[in-house]
Length: 169
Image (cartoon, rainbow, N blue to C red; front, side, top):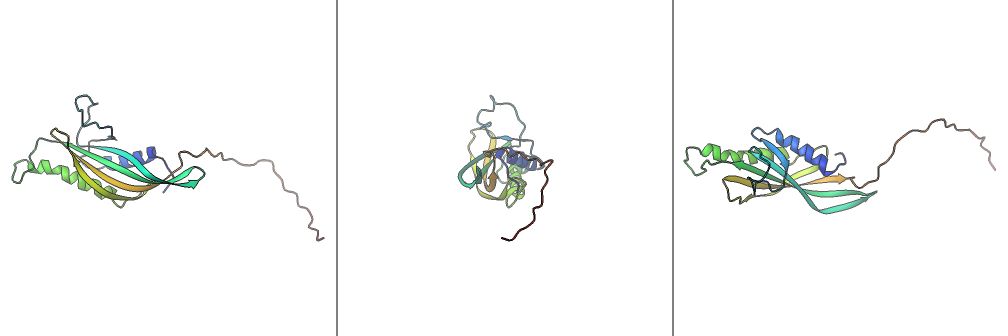
């Protein structure tokens, strides 16, 4: 695992999630589904990511070992019926299949910028609309160097070492 910051983790997870067949949009969570008529339009199914933590251990030199919570919001807009026997039930249940695909990719995964990803919960979110919204909660570890001072690297030029004879006193 490389050391990183949340920007790099977002980019890595967004790439993994955008490879799921059927996911049309990946973005940072900003409560977009609450006011769909006032938000920038996005296609669905959509996945939104949010990050939070309340556990960070100092490692020195302004580095931290962060237990990161990653909330995945899966939004699926449909008017299909999920009740048993509905003619369009298969489309309505596709939402559950997308949840499964997300979990297959993320649970027990590690990446270039995080390690130890595990699902710790999931729950529906009431939108008051025709869209299905679920939040899937994951936890992982990251080493955050974002507060560190920049380290300059370079080389020494024109240095010579003179050998002195060793004298025993």
